[in-house]
Amino acid sequence: MRTFIQPISAEMILGVYWYFKFPENVYNFQFFKFFQGFGGHADNPAELKAQVSVDHPESLIQKLEELHFRFKRMYLDMKINEDQLLISTGDYTLFDGHFQFVSQIEQLLVHHNAVLTDVPFEVKSSRMFSPEKKDFETIEHRFMQITGSDFKKNNAENCSVRIDCNLPAANKNDLINDLIRICSEENIQVLYYYDCHFKQHTNLMFFFSNGRQMENAVQNVDINAFGNKVRHLDQKYPLHFGHFGGMEYYPRNGPFVELITDEEYILNKK
View 1 (cartoon, one colour):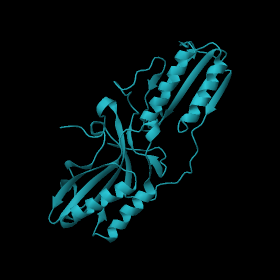
View 2 (cartoon, rainbow, N blue to C red):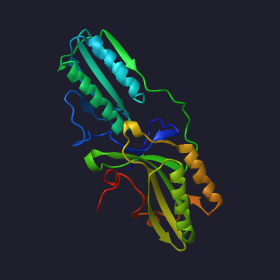
View 3 (cartoon, rainbow, N blue to C red):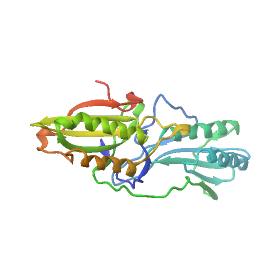
View 4 (cartoon, helix red, strand yellow):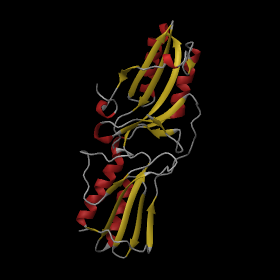
């Protein structure tokens, strides 16, 4: 598990993504190459790039602009020198929608008889199609972490909200039922947790997420609205955020699954 360090908006997409490795056995590209993100202090997005030559590039560029209108969440960058084009897109979290976008670009390249090239060229002009702008709002609640996972099926990772808390063991099941209800209200389809009991209390580590994010069914989650509802639960239960009792009581039992979709991309099977 890793914690995201790049800027995070309060309205975001949770779910299955790729950053360090290509989604092997899911997509196969003729023109585009995958360039991994590095994270940490390097902090660069993962990218998909294709360098091609094509007759009548102005026609291809027009078709790419029309395609981008259908995939407004993506950026599309083109560097141009006569019939030479370097086409790229990317992000810190490449969801299925990004790869669907590139699959459509590949079809256009085939239709325009594009040829792969690797000769450096001087950029004479460029075109950039930016993602649709959204209002930026920071996450208000410090008890939530945005985390990535280790590698799952087809090199997938998963973007989740993690919440650590402690409460009397007698209230555990009622709390989980309330969290399931909140997930249903806030467009969250994945909920699992780890626990550790000591005395009459329970340390809990919850993960909230979604599955694969296809372009025609992207699930945006308002993290602050979700967090507000979770915060109100500490008025209903003797709930404390964080863990009690030291590392020997760290919640390692689990995972216990309450809600799941695309399980093989989210949890490692034992």
